[in-house]
Amino acid sequence: MEVYCSHDSDGLYIYGKNNQTRFDWYDKKFNLWATSEGCNSEDACFYELKVDKNGAALEFAYHFFINLSEGIYRVRITDETLKVIEQQITDQPS
Image (cartoon, rainbow, N blue to C red; front, top):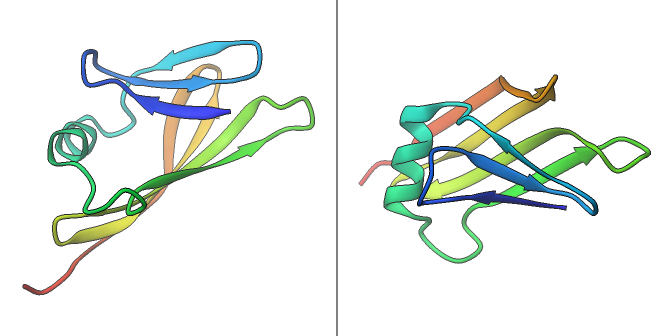
């Protein structure tokens, strides 16, 4: 399973073994900032997915370190919509 943000369109894609699902951004202002700024390094941003026994995505966590900000967004997937259930952002001193 893979989570993919497209710079060409407004949204997020989750690719599974047999399907592809497009979602609207879970926090449009943050998502546009994150995709335009980019991560500090190749491994500074990543997704963790929680799936059910059939392999369908139930929840994901987006961990990031962009510029001087780091944190996590935890998002639940229900009825083909995304709902933020946890958000933590820490700005590091310069």
